[in-house]
Amino acid sequence: MIIPKKTKLSDDELGRVVKIAEDFGCRIQVIEGVAQSIYALVGDERHELLINRIEGLPYIDRIDTIQSPHKLLDIRSELRNHPISFGGVELGKELLLIAGPCTIDPRNPQRLYETAHALKEAGAQALRGGVWKPRTNPYSYQGDNKCLDILMEASRKTGLPVNTEVMDEGHLEMAIDAGVHMLQIGTRNALNYSLLSQVGKAIDGKDTFVLLKRGRHMGPIDEFISAAEYVVNYGNPNIMLCPRGTLPGLEGYRNHPDESITPLLKEKTWAPVVVDPSHSVGKAVYVESCSMSAVAYGADGLCIECNIEPTRGLGDDPKQAIRPDEFRRLAEKCREIWKLRSL
Ligand code: PEP
Ligand code: MN
Image (cartoon, rainbow, N blue to C red; front, top):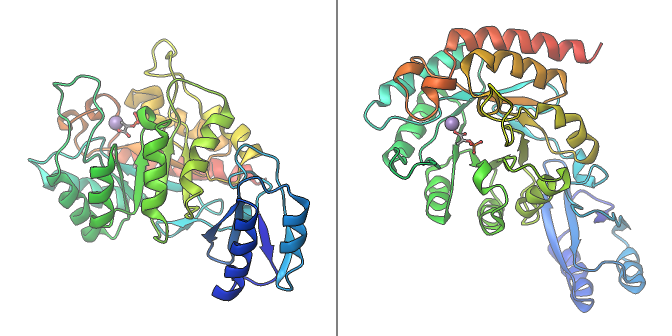
């Protein structure tokens, strides 16, 4: 990681750094932070001569060589100082609440609009809604391109930024063109390195965010963080890590709740942690306690399935979505726990 003396290098200055890096078979990845640009040296950056030549440039302060499988996401990386704000919330300063249905119903856009208004009123700062769905059963409803317009219309009507899952390059292109604010990479694609890279490239230079769910076949924590590194190493550091439960499930729950990994993630990475309690426990009645537990463990935010009429929703909603009035109560309790954290 190259730390310049100023907040941003000029094109000429950057050109000289790039040239030196290339002489040693490395490349420079620019990460445009809000306050400061960061210059990652990608490749084997341990040549002494390479370090000396770059550190010898008058506008370079130093090179930090972090020995980590995920240099950019590492807690010691300069990116830890990069503020991440979404939905008007600066992560780490206030609890981020993303809420909305599992699946958007193409035949009933009004239900999404009403849900979105009610959730905003109840304290949500962002709206989620599945346009395309990864369904276990090939005969289940798979989503519909039409729902992308419905989601963006809900965003316009409420002013809430929106999150939706993308599963392939086609979805990615459509979502970016439509102006989706946060792309979700689901648990099934959490280790799809080709998709992670495509998403990273597609959001470079944009203010789009990524919510990366944790793979449900629990792997080491470093594996989760390294998956996020695939996205960030193309230049956009707007990533959030989302524990959402793993398999095998705990009897009675849909998955094995894993909000307790939050402090472990926070020890290793600066990336905000946004827990999904809905897929974790899989039943509306347990969502509030899982949410409170996530906040107690140090989560920066929650992503919760909600619907004004869960029983009439599609996908997971009849089982696990909560109503806006339940969401309001949950939000109030979680904000109280947030305050307790700093006592
Ligand atoms: C979802 O958010 O509706 C979803 C399918 O998520 P996950 O990938 O965590 O199962
Ligand atoms: Mn769902």
